[in-house]
Amino acid sequence: MGAESLNRHFLSSFHRNESFYHPIILHLIMNKKLVFIGFLTAILMAPVFGQAPKMATVSMQRLFDGYYKKQEAFDRLNSVQRQAQEEMEERAAPLRRLEERLEDIQERAQNQLLSDDARRDLEEEFNALATDLRRRAGEFQQWQQQKVGELQQRQQQIRMNLIEEIRDVVLSVAREQGVDMVFDTSDVTGSGVPAVLYAASSLDMTDRVMRELNRNAPQG
Image (tube, rainbow, N blue to C red):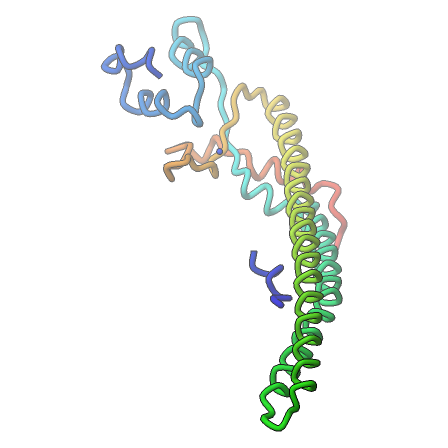
């Protein structure tokens, strides 16, 4: 009945002035995901109005993978998934038994020595069981889809909560160090181009944020 199926399962105003911009800046302008107008204005006008903004970088992917709460959260999620798998096996077992009974009836119906009445009885039994199987299979599929949706939603919520916690620590460290802008070096655009093409290692504060993230991690 497919009991293992549970396991398989994100600018026109600039066009007239393209030649005005450096090619890298132009690339950023054309990519909405990387940058917005306020950021470009700050970068381009900073030399005019005073000191350029202080920038830093982090790898959100490294922070996410290295955050001690991630493992705790996904351990809990894995436990829920195992419980769902066990429940799925329990719900699928009666369907497999029905399938076996239908196969048995089909084999018995091949007996050439069966009387017409016996063959008719087998046919009626087969049709009744097949109808029951279709009903149960539909209910099982509906339950399965709902359970998979719940697990996916729970996983997404866990990820969003962890990212929000990491972001708060990034902002705290940035303020502490007087940083005006922080860029994620692990981000990739929809076209596969890194969001940050280059950044000096001296700008990276991932390790500093990681220490703060895991300051209260259980020892051992």
